[in-house]
Length: 138
Image (cartoon, rainbow, N blue to C red):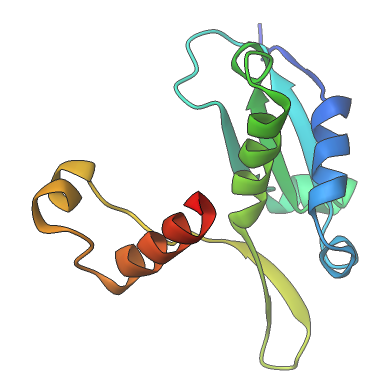
């Protein structure tokens, strides 16, 4: 017997995403959002590129999988931040012929807080992050 995952539609997340994603991006990619009801998820959410078979049959380019239990604990502002974070993993670019394409991308900044605590913002990315944090804190 096949093991099935416990998934369901996530209209609340879809509505948040629709408000966040710019119109020009919506014209290029099709993003689906689902809740994962499975237990012991280590992530609150994750953006994934749809495999070629799912894309062929459904037209979906990316899927954002959200841990429903953890998502529901978040404030409205933090829900928006989470979905913005996941959509930022989707990068739009142009191929050699100038056609719009999309791919997953890594985080702008990756670091350990213990290193920053000891050495300060020592990379260009950390310095940029420091400027953003100072601006937001004002």
